[in-house]
Image 1 (cartoon, helix red, strand yellow):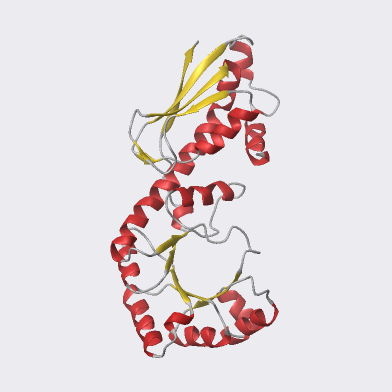
Image 2: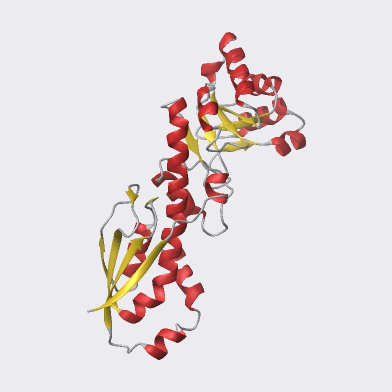
Length: 277
């Protein structure tokens, strides 16, 4: 709630100059938010929260996670015309960005599950500063997994950690000796040797970074032959997109993660139209 209030404060600053000069204070109106293109709807909960703390009433006309079509009304807001005009852009920004992410996630999940119906598609921390919570929620609405919200969610040993710690085994061992049982340990692996060292040292998750699908399959086959496959969750990251998600899903891993879900999406187009009571 406080984050949403800050978004409004950022936009309004000392006042909505145009609205205050042109719209009488006691004017009431009805505002309808419409989809302008096909999209997976997200962000309605946030707009509802803004409506509540702004003293407006609202009616939800379409559910988050569902596809909406051009010209389809998704939400109505009513109350002070000044308030409706003041919150318009922030509300649309939220719905457009979150729906764009949910749409991208939904499409990639659908592609990946053609290769493996049980695959999980996860986001990363490559998010917009200040908007991560909402972008991650949009990922979930679209059918994906949010992955880490912050650095304290789990241990994720990346390449630079490995370098600083003195190797894969040293990094995983140090984490395993000190971390709570409630926190999983994930370790990036760039080779089969890295993978086996990390498993032997006690990693719960192996992050195969920048492997091609055929190389991932090779790692999976070796782990299966050594009885190691079921000891860990296998995650693939690095260049996962709509074109190769199916191939990665078919390789035998458990999770695909993609930063593109939150840094390379296209915002969906929505508008808000006002009518007078």
